[in-house]
Image (cartoon, rainbow, N blue to C red; front, side, top):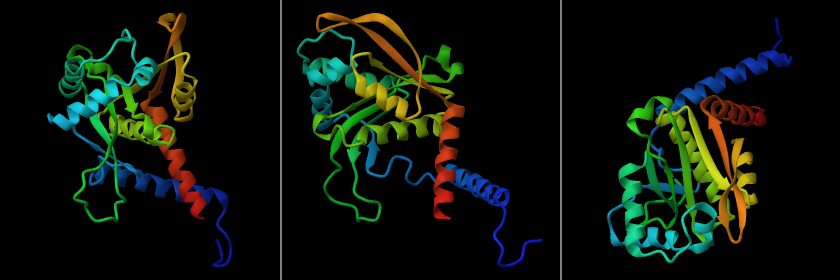
Length: 236
């Protein structure tokens, strides 16, 4: 028997932390209040407004961003083409949201709308393929807000939504082989390199690979448990 002044053995501490971890994970599935928030961001619907049409067009007409994320031919983007893309997101995507900067949860609601900084979506699943529970992420962050960690935060949020709310089993993300920053980011977030279509892309005078990464539901859960356990043990 342990005395009041003695420290519990390591296995007792681990058991306690695992019980606490299970309770934390279970509680998180019940709390929906902040489902469309992450620490610094808000995720809202894409609306049928001139403002959202202009914002989507600003993303689509960014030639550098387009070159890094789309296999389409690099030509000037018309507003009509941007509008078609916007409607495709709204009507076909499993999930599509405007990424916005958010005030802290403790701050009172502001009359000023949250500032849009990007767009994130999960590709729509054909009904005949729905049983596979598999889709891909698409994300764009506007140039002034890149390299600030917003992309990582938004991807982690959409993974949570996809696995915990959308019931998906696998979520993939793709990039071009010349985009070293994207490859490093995806691996850091826990995606596993799954392969490449060799020299499938002609870009800027040369051939490049089309690279695929993926994360399984079990891998995502393991990362969540590890993160939560680290937080619990750090408090001690």
